[in-house]
Length: 153
Image 1 (cartoon, rainbow, N blue to C red):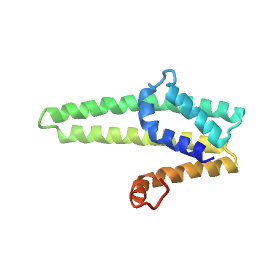
Image 2 (cartoon, one colour):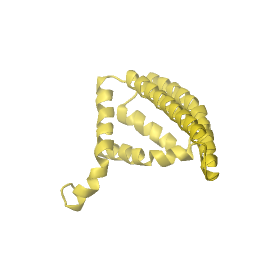
Image 3 (tube, helix red, strand yellow):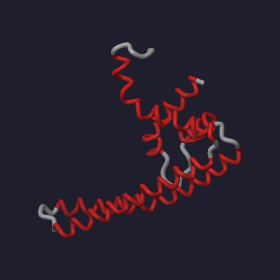
Image 4 (tube, rainbow, N blue to C red):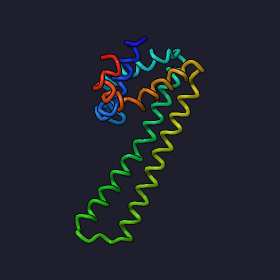
């Protein structure tokens, strides 16, 4: 159990880098495939849950892709305005608001995905997911405790 928890935690730490490796709409990177299997194993998802999650993930990624592109396009416009040396405050303000609104839409897409995933889980699986979330919240503190031999090395 500890080995599996360690594996899942390590994948969680690597997820941001893995997400950059897995281009939107592309074939999953082997690390993403391994992470997929680790989640399945840790949460003990049944085949129906895995199928539903795969659809949910694909829908999530498809919903994110245009928003991410729009945010990047607006950020490029903002950068161009600043490059002029004297950006028009009104134009800049409108672009910042637009970028913020798109960011909120992106957060909403993620919330829908998270809620959909949680809805797939039974009570025990939700408990395991909460363990991972707790570990993620406290991971930044572990090196300090390790430095003073307060946790096992």
